[in-house]
Image (cartoon, rainbow, N blue to C red):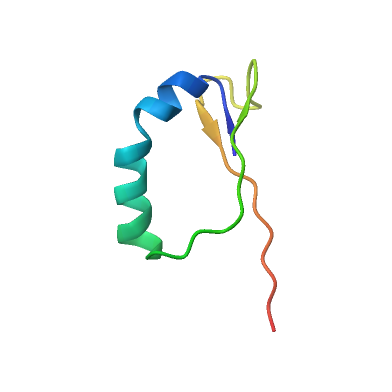
Amino acid sequence: MYTTDVADYRAHAPALGRVWRRLAGRHYPAMAVVGVVRLWDEQAHVELDGIALLP
């Protein structure tokens, strides 16, 4: 996960965790939060990158 404001992400982590649990349950993938200066969409604050493995 990339964010333009790590402090803001941390401040909203409890609310984000509630949304995650509602949508995905208690299954948390390995993840990292990386602070960046800007994202491809300059109005975005968070960008997710994921890889899925299908059996």
